[in-house]
Amino acid sequence: MEARPAILTFKVLSALLSYPQEDMLAAIPRMRDALDQEGLCVGAHRKALDTFLDDFAQCDLYDLQERYVLLFDRSRALSLHIFEHVHGESRDRGQAMIDLKALYEKGGMAMEADELPDFLPLFLEFCSTQKLDAACDLLGQPAHVLAALAERLKKRASSYEAVFRAVAAIAATQPRKEDLDAILCEADPAPDDLAALDAAWEEEAVTFGPGADGLGAQTAVGGCGSEALAARMRHAKRAVPTADNPHQSGGHA
Image 1: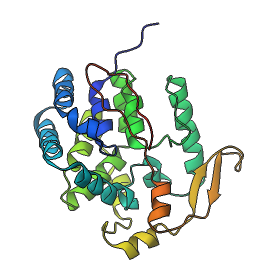
Image 2: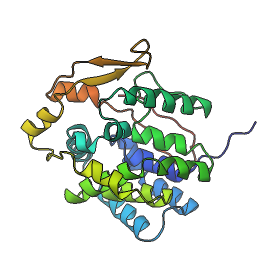
Image 3: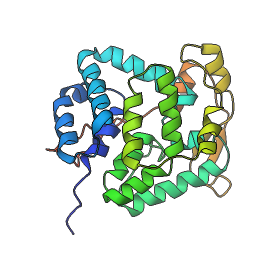
C-alpha cells in the first residue's frame, strides 16, 4: 500500500515549535516553499508566519534557543504538552496519554521511548500523516489550548503567537468560551519570575509507564529548579520538513 503524501504545512509548523537547530535555519526557504505549495495558511496568518520566519533568519541561533527555553521550558503556562492544560497532574492525564499513544500506533507512527504523546510538535507531525479533514478534526479538539497559548504569547509580545494562530486557523474550530476562560484564569507567571515558576512546579509530577494504578501512569515527587524543569520538559528534536524529504523524522536531545 502506497504511503499517503505528508501534509507539509503541519510538518513545518511542527518544526517551528521545536527546539531551534541549525538545520531549521538553513531550511527556512524550503519551509516557505512548502507553505506556498499547499496554500493551507493564507492571508494575515501566512503574512504573520513570514514575519516569524524573517525573525528566525535574522537571529543568532543561541539567542533563538535561549528564547525558546525561556518561553516553553520555564513556564508551565506555556507548556507545549497539551494535556498539561487539560488534565494538569490528575490521573485522567495518564489515560489520555495512553489513548493518544494508541491513536498514533493505529495510524502507523511509532514514538521514541522518551517522547510524550501530547507534545504539540509530535501531535502536529502525526496530523501531517492523516487526511486533511481528519487532521483538522484532531487539531480542533485542543482548540481552546491553542487559543490560550496564543493569547499568553500575545501578552508577551512573542512572535511565536503567529504559529499558534496559524494552527488554529487551519483547524477552523472555534473554542468554547468557558473552556478557554478556564485555562486563561490559571496562574501565568512571567518567564523571568523564578520564585513564581518554582512555586508552579512544586506539585507532583506525573511520569508515564506500565503498572501504575492500571493507567500506565506513575506519580513521582517533582523537584523544582532548572535541572528538574529541564528533565520534565526535555523535547524531541523534530526534523525540518521540506518538499524533498517530507517523511524525514527527527532524533532526540
